[in-house]
Image (cartoon, rainbow, N blue to C red; front, top):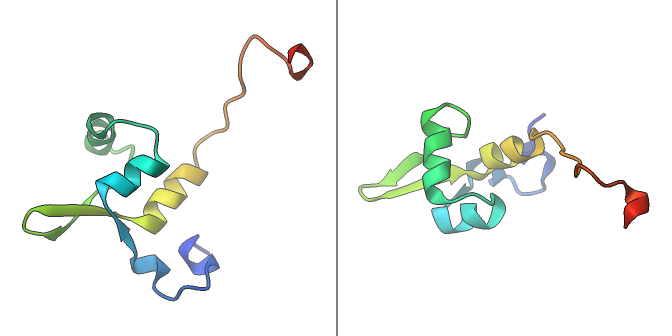
Length: 80
C-alpha cells in the first residue's frame, strides 16, 4: 500500500508539488535535487505545463520515508 493510499484524500495520489514546496520538505538545494534526479537517486519531475514542472507528492513522501536514519556520531544521549 502506498503512502498516498493511507490518506483520506482520494486525490492524494495525483497531488503534485512545486519546487518551492519541495524545498520545504527536502533540505537540499534545487541544484542538488537536479543532480540526484539525473543520477536516478530522486523522483523525476513531471512537466505540467510548457514552462512548469512539479513532483508527485506521493513519490516524494515515499523517497523521504525510505531514507536511512542517521544517528549523530561522536556523542551518546548521555553526553547531552
